[in-house]
Length: 331
Image (cartoon, rainbow, N blue to C red):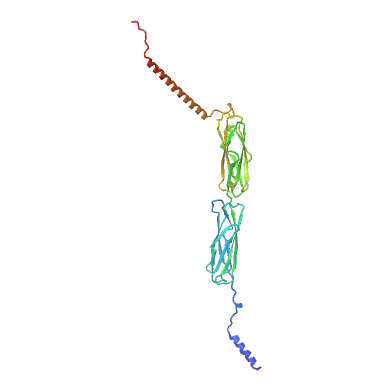
């Protein structure tokens, strides 16, 4: 028995050496996960948040398969995008890559809410997952990031706290408080001036006017007051009763000029009606002269008619009486 053991061992060794080698699962080549990276072509885009405008920004990007030598078959890439406070979407959000098609492009769009503040900035993040179609481990894709800023638009409104039409007596001082409301989406500097025609009119007529500020900075959503004081001359000699003095004010956004945008500008008119202050102060207006002439003509015509009637009646009386009897001529 002892003699047969070495013989059996030798036979078993020969059989093992002759048998072909079959690798086990642990010795097989490992499955490599796809290496996909994404890029965005734009790092920053500006959105237009003004009411009635598009408010949409669109980024372009690409997904690229890096390890084409290690990966066989198709790789599917699923993309997603996120920006806090925005509605964003990826088109297409499902890509297929392989050794022949190593790169595919996509678009990411976001829409900014209306009237978003100019100070707001959004961070856009794009990422996803890559996976072999034939199975195997998946890999994370990205993230790629970009910024969405909000462009500034310029709007303001003007109201007067007093009546735009005011009555004024000689020597009187009028005060107008003008409210400027910033309706844009960022801080704005507003210049306030009287038009050149108004300045010339005031100088010629003896009125004096002054603004307490000609340049006001207004934060987004706030209102600032500008005060205009107008002093009438001590006498209205040379003016007409109820004559209207027009004050044209010009409001202009200095910030829009600085930014190279379309200039936001508004005109606002105030009206001063001159009222009677006594007989020595105000000339008779053309309207009053015309009314007087018309009244005179009516009276003159009425007088002529009455005169004609009287004369006509006298003529009738004379006809009824007949010719007067005279004395004989003495022949």
